[in-house]
Length: 340
Image 1: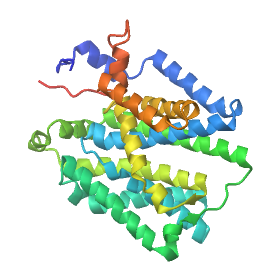
Image 2: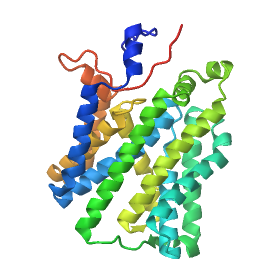
Image 3: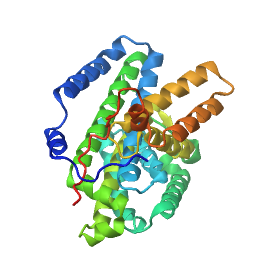
Image 4: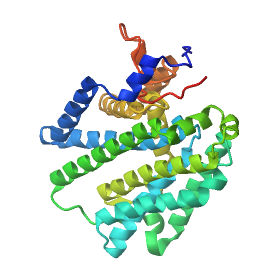
């Protein structure tokens, strides 16, 4: 591992306080402009791939808040993806509630679930917490599967078709997922610069010392899990309407959580832009291997990801730092705590 000085220089602190440079802001504005006009110049196939990238970027940001910044690997975070999807499906399919209202209901339900089960579960640490979240996901999936009258049980539930034709619908969901990914990334950026984010990083580094310094660790961990659950539930809600049909095995699928975990690790744990870069890499890699190696695409994709993690354990930032002439790349965009 590369040694990093724990005492920032005054010039470095001033640069961090000043925020992003004008060049970075201009590049960001150009990227957002290109993403905004892209659906009108690319085909439906690439619109769907881009929507998948944005969806997994947002999911990985939610995972990153818990695992990357706080050090609590919530493998069962997919439970909120399923809860968000079923909240939208039931409200729209059974009660005719408008889609926009179901988005708020999905986020609210996920936050309330964390408020209920967060304090006791967050007393667990490491793999015990990870296993507990897996159990939570399985328990909720069984409840949904057996609530046949309300959720359709194992047969699933259908949602109304989105207005407009297939092309208009694809563009609408492209923008919905794009907006969600941007919002999730903005939340991660603000989180990393605020007291909450710095406190969670202290918990990740040494929770006992953080408690000794006066941090209410349970409150911090519950709050960040609420943020993570809200992002994940919102994505699940949009995905349900996009698919127009969901069932428990599809939305409570652990493969979604594993993929989100791989994306945030490849992008760089505890970084702001890492989940975005990881989502682009993994989704484009999946598309390429599927198109070229139809019968072996999963094996090829897994092998490439294993090699990438083995060569660059710290993800995308480490890979960029090893490029010629790029000795000081920093994608973390976060304020480092000052240690004396």
